[in-house]
Image (cartoon, rainbow, N blue to C red; front, side):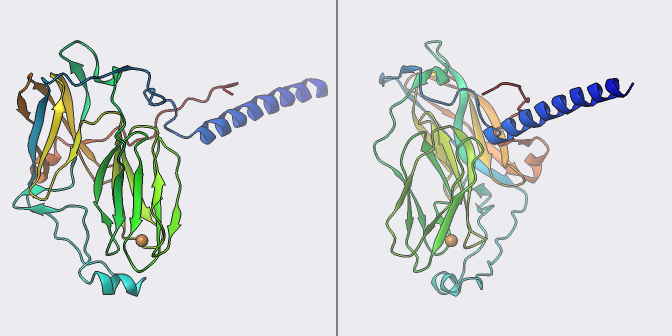
Length: 294
Ligand SMILES: [Cu+2]
């Protein structure tokens, strides 16, 4: 009787230890591992054919836009001196048009029948700059390619601590005193979108969209965007805007004609809220614990 009980406990202990081990592995790997095979590029190289087209449009904001709020910069008097009118930038609307929406080709098939994800596109040799200027990030939203250089500069007479919080890429944070050289980083995996904060100034916020292809744009102050050199084909175009836990994304199907252009107009705000869909890309990938995974 005693012996049988001991055996049961032994088996239970072993099973529980294995389960604990499995969940520890899962945690260490993070949520985004294995996400759609965003690793090294394996597809065929796309070459410009001269028949590429354009996707352009306007991002509208329906209803009353929230008024920008003045930011309390008392945590760092230098920021107050440098930028006395610093205010929130989460919803920048003028004349009913929304700035800082990230618009990109999410998926689709070229006229030659190849999925967009099967092609590779050369990484631009030039980097993209994210500047800390007046104690906010400029630009507020930016797009970059996988493995393209991100150059972070500090134009302020104070110290910043840039801290991107990705789900599919490694997280890091780095202090950058005034006068320090630019910090250069890359992101190996596509990710929509990486929130960036500053550990020094709690109000500072930026978003970085990382894509394997060059077909993305950010809406300007007049709400318009243009994505050029898009190969003819039928695509899902997505517009992402910050807000809520993981932003809001809207999608639509478009067909880009050879040497032609197509419109993709989106709307955010009140009237559009009902059809809003929360970005799935930003949610942690479902990860089932597996024994002996590594
Ligand atoms: Cu800062």
